[in-house]
Image (tube, rainbow, N blue to C red):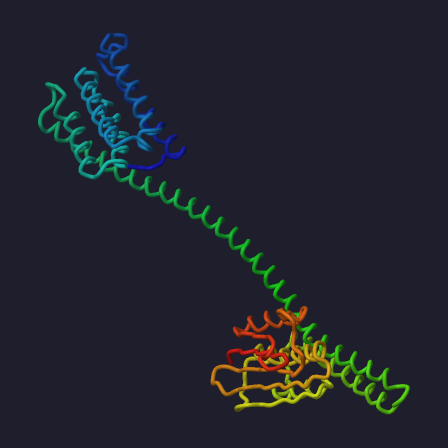
Length: 390
């Protein structure tokens, strides 16, 4: 049974029902021997009214949400009503029209055996039940075949119309679902764009802190040394200024390298060479050692290890001035690379946060699937260990 009846289907069904009633009534009024104001005629009008109201009411509510037994009862009452009209011996020229809408309704909401049974019942009421002395068996047979062809046509057209109606409802449902999915997709795209922008801002902030911040720290230390040495040892002060100038050029190169990475890939020194250069430029008593065989790693991993070396040396300079530092780049494991930065300073009290440096470095390491461990050494000093897949 249909689960819903839309307005267009209701209007069309009611128009068909009223047209059948009107044609039947018109054919009866124009028939010979029909008395429009007789008691039998008044009963005929009443039965037609009951038929029209019941059929339209069934389309409006019964087929949409009525219980199953009510549907079967409705069709039984319609057959009874039709048989009563035949029994009244009203002119039968147009009564067959009243059966067509009921057969159409049965096609929509009843199983096929029930539809066949209703068609057979109407054929019997139209061709067998009427007492008409002028009908021969051949006349009844011809009338039955004509009505059967009409019923078959009604069933076929009803099925076509019902398929089109369901396809329309399905298309409207799919269109609504598609619009909802598009709305969700647009919202997701906006969230993704916002998240990508936030990630890019964080990445640029880390690059500025890890790169430019490192070089500015080195320049500051060298200029402070130059100022302290200038009155007594001008030559050493000039040497410190020269190193500060070289570091500023390196900082500029690093900025250009970062900007270039945003635009297009470009050649750069090997990872061990780059880290060795950072160690040399730091101005610290620091050493660098490569363990294992250097191999090519993804650009993101290489950048992460390079920034970790810069951050480790910057922290030594800030928090352990005068301490010796050691950097080890370990390629022994086939699928992992480890960078360890240690110093022999006094270490830190409590948890090491490193301002913006260590949190930003943790984000950078996590972005490539690695881990970062930072804390005081058991013996003396501080250790920063970064391990990344590569």
